[in-house]
Image (cartoon, rainbow, N blue to C red; front, side, top):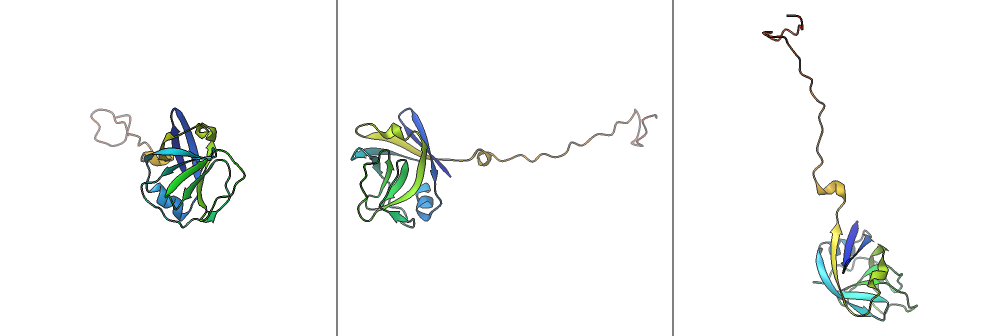
Length: 150
C-alpha cells in the first residue's frame, strides 16, 4: 500500500507495511497535519485520534521511517539520524518514505497533506470485453435462409 505526502510543492510517497496499526492509520486518511521539528531529525504532527498499538514497538529508527508515537498520539517522519535511541514506550514503524525525505529537512513547522494512493486498476471499474458478433449478411428480400445468392 502506498501513501502520498505533499510538503509545499514537493510530493513524496511512502510504502506502508501491513500491520494493525497501519490499517487503523489508513482509516484516518486523508488529512492535513502541521508538523513540527524535533531535534533536527524528525517532523511530527498530532493525529486526529489515537490508533491501534498492534504493531511492533521499537526504539531504533532509520532515515525515511514513518512512525506512530502512541503517547502523542503523533505521526513522525525521520529525515536525519542523530544516533540517539527513542525513549519508552518506543515507536511503531508503519512505513518508509520511498524517496525525497530531504524535503522535510527545513527549519520550523511544515503543513503536510497525507493521503492514500490507490492503485490505478482499482480506481475505475474494469470493463469486460466480449467477442464481437459477426452479422450474417443476406441479400434482399431474403428471409434469413443464409444464402448469399438469392
